Image 1 (cartoon, chains in turn purple, blue):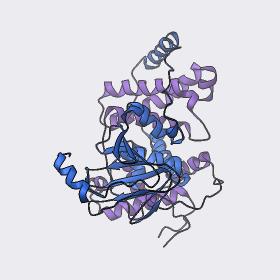
Image 2 (cartoon, helix red, strand yellow):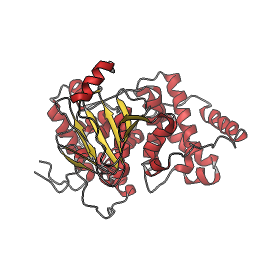
Image 3 (cartoon, one colour):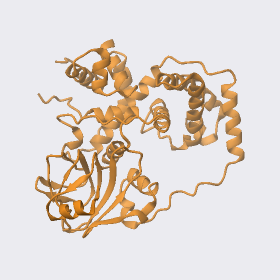
Image 4 (spheres, one colour):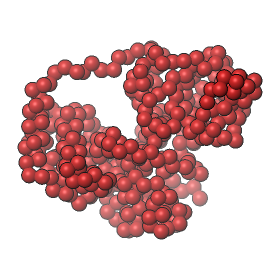
Length: 173
Length: 221
């Protein structure tokens, strides 16, 4: 990515293209795009990656997370779904300001590495729910319906999985 | 019950990360993230989860010649390079210090010409972000009072600068307040500093009290 930004390296872009374009296409098809449209959207996203490469900051996100964001924004342009999830009982957005903490010792990159490593260890049932929520963008109640699970179970499994991703929760309840 | 590893998560973050959150609520999440490190981290973590799934996705082969076609587009781009970095005109002084997400929303919503007076000392500015909800930026002068009102649905208020106080307490930068149809309140801007607030609501506000009679007479909403 750095080489694309700094030297407009087409070689580096080709490598990125080889890995991500087919995955972007799969992502778009998963969201319901027909094959020709998915192909075009994947192309679009890769062109945006080329044009915006200079904005990529490796301290803020991994390449795949950054490319995902570009793809997600493209998705928003194309098919606007408007989910308005209910607030959680302990909604973090409603919490008062925390005492100003010094920057956490864990960098974004470390956090991402941990997320990726822990994701690989999750039991399938948790992984599937995370994917439905974070990748497909289904609401908890939609997930409950499509998996035939009580809403509370969906919520607690997702919370458990996320706690694992944060790391260090040795003994899940 | 509070665990060491308790960390902020809610469905708003996963919907935001996946790109399905209503645009008004997404603006709320982004803007609070700019004001609160904890929220920003929670969003970053959610996006990392989403990004990992992209990486793990079973690829679907691109058509033959896809890379060549991308390279041709790059050639075309470079040929027509230069130009069009006009940038969004910075205007308005006072709002320059608001989070980027909001300044962008202001710039793409017609700029500062769209401020209208809502009540003495209160100005509001509708933001076009593609939300199905009503999204507005409020500017509240010190000690100015928003007429007492209730809500048709939920109303989210994120304080961006300054602060206000209503019957339920005082709110400062980064604080999010939620009011529902059962709540009636009369926020008053705190002394000393102009208050800016981002408001996202489902359903119109209804003035109660004397102003409400006027509103009903005028047939607004």
